Length: 176
Image (tube, rainbow, N blue to C red; front, side):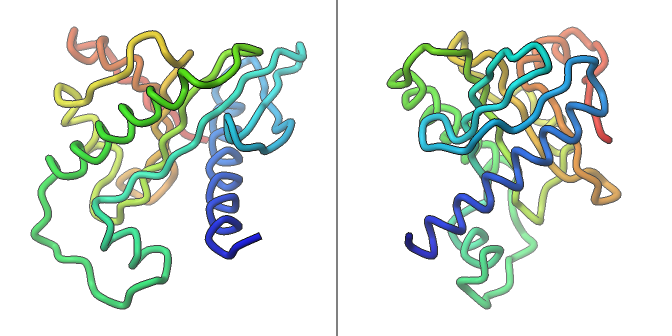
């Protein structure tokens, strides 16, 4: 197994564990990790033995930030970044994952989990840019966004609720 493959799996395992911890703190239905695999990246199960596949991806501002965060570059990240670049990266990930999901078997529903790894932007930045986020329609049961908050705690938000933001309703950000 290559180092990068192992690193990818470690990132995915951490993301799904953060998701499960925050989700279980906030919802009556409790999930547990059943197993990790390739497509989708993980399968979780609730107490009624209902399975849910979770495709996991990580969002970085750009390739140079990814290299820096993953320890492959010593270059400092510039602070004159533009949120529209991160949203462009996010929309690109959403499109890619939507296309990939169409190849999966239909054994159980699939949700998408996006973990924001950018050190420049927090959950509030993403929520503020909600009008520019293009959520796949009908491909995923849910599209979850995991990101740090203002005080560095991990927060979880179901991006399928963005329509409610358009109507001025509560954004529904959850934490543990």
